[in-house]
Length: 273
Image 1: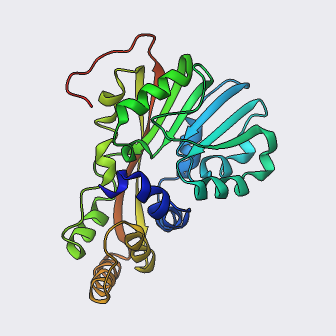
Image 2: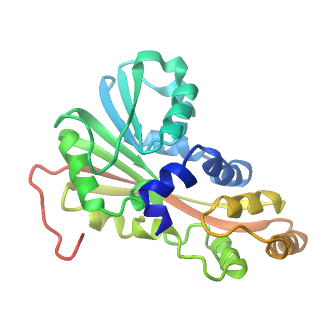
């Protein structure tokens, strides 16, 4: 699967933040959730004034950029990503935070940190990209202090279902959403051997799309063959027809955060790999 292939993620899909930005634009311009996504995630941290935080798979650093004015002075953030391009972009965006934030290339399954180095680990829409999640989760637990917080953000099973249906219409060979590998339903079960006291906080909403261009940009940002001219025309006609009929194309969204605390003893979950 391309979206779990390390080389493709670093050199293709997430070489820089452009593909993420195309997808983010759809949410930024049309979301009807009330609270922007990165602000929603930030609110779930609820950490003491002096805390050490590791973000694994930080991307362009949007979580911290969009909450810059809310970050306590006593927090120290370490941002990691597989992609050097993503880290460079994050470093540029967060230059004003100075020594509060450091950056390091790292793989989720082999984190270059000592045991107990962090009070919290943030995994924001990234665990479904990791084929060996058991190894990554063991690493998350290892680098956390006893009772340390894991914040794992992902999607619900119905996230952007109307957009997925449109993608299947124009690209019948398109695979299921990658987030189904680790979502708000199956995610807690996968976390259970390493984390306890779990809770799921959901953000339900919808997109009120009023033009087809951002939808095309979203689909073009996804892996797979590029949209040919007739396929792009089909997308435009489909979206335009919904807008002409209802005043907007409604796309349901469901994302959320799974919060858990480091287990003192590693559990077992038969059949999980």
